[in-house]
Image (cartoon, rainbow, N blue to C red; front, top):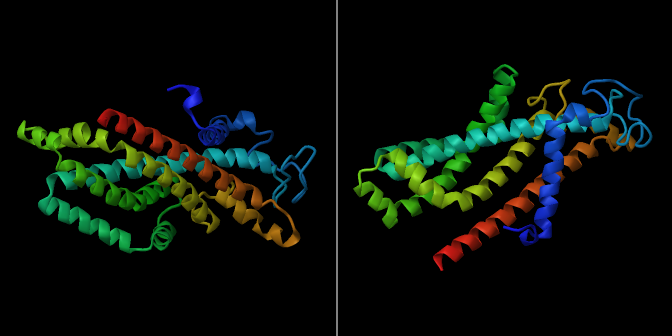
Length: 274
């Protein structure tokens, strides 16, 4: 693949993701001030030493935004990876084994999906200790139900194909069929779903933080920054809109890249079939 084959929209998405990842990886080097350092007055306007202004405590918004990128992206990515690992393994196993295994896992998944996601997360997080790993685990378990539904539908279509039947006749194990036969042939829809799930995880984490049950202060994350500065909107202060714009921009960039990868994967598959 050559650079000229990448559409402009994908370049925009890649650039946005690259900026977010650079902020996440090199936050102490990129941010002009510390994550919790009070450097000015409350809600100072943009300009001068504070390109994005200051927040409700006088902390630099640009620095908080950079550190918030590290927290938001790392937690959302960890939850998405874990949800995919759990959802794909269980859904593919259910599709390959069928029978009682399929029914048990599918009914358990239906039960989990019947519970409103946000309410379930709020109840669980309100009871359990406020730890990052617990937050990641709760997000991953809830999101894995959506991955399971898609993974099972895709795997059921592939499991009846001739090359899978041939693998069964050779006596291959369930593990072999899942990881060597079904998974490589289902990457296109799974790739799209991964991008959507990651964007959803970012927004879901921000929602939890906005409600006070996500990332806890004084650590910076974009949803928490919106909550901390929401009262400024009444006075015409745009501090709460800055992290909100960052959330929207990241979600759009991820979707632009996923759309391009989906089209490219589909075209390659069509070329091989031809």
